[in-house]
Length: 301
Image (cartoon, rainbow, N blue to C red):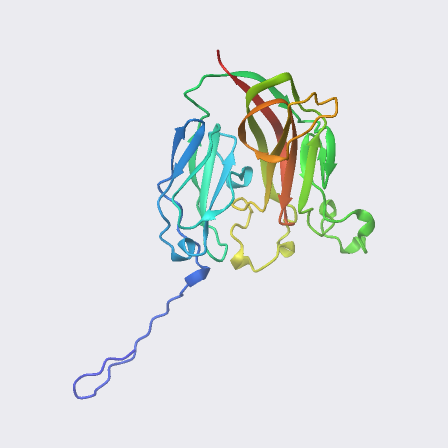
């Protein structure tokens, strides 16, 4: 760049170097996250993203961690599907723990920081705890694409040992060098049988940790500049959610079951309820479930 005076004399040229990030820059962190309890539901509000590529083509992500202190993105599960990037509120089932929020831009890049708000499962109605159905640490039941070992439920490797062509080429024996299964289902062999048709509030408790199953630097895909977090703590490439199915019949005598539906907190009127846990992954991250239980509450007299 040069300046030119009225008689055409030029100044010494000067220059400036500036790196323009554009769409490759992560969006700004979520701010203003608040929670209001409304009849067993959580009304979450937050400030609108100031990034155009979030509001147009991006999204808002919420996850839930079953702790009221020290919640982490990679120790949580999805609280809902991705929301449009221009919304500023959502209503979700209210439960005790921490809701975590982040923005995602149109390229899928997440905001680096995590917004958090703590919730308690308080309600105008008074509930009485009527029991807890616990599936850990044995995780007894049917497993497809997952396994339990030393009290932890995890995804299987993507391929069995007898499918490996050359053991010498396998970097990580635990996952066969090919990552982990992308879907899995654990169906417990026990269910809730109330003995008669009753109304109950059911709350899921899951304690997950998501971690890189192929955490060798030369095994990770893409360029280092594209990694969100070199130690994978800010990434959640796996998830888990619980589904439930109800019946008004005796579950031991040819019951007619309702279709499976996702369960976080739900009020049911049924004789019995069965459950299953769905695990998903991008093939690179695994999820370790150390606790899985269902809490049953009734309205206090």
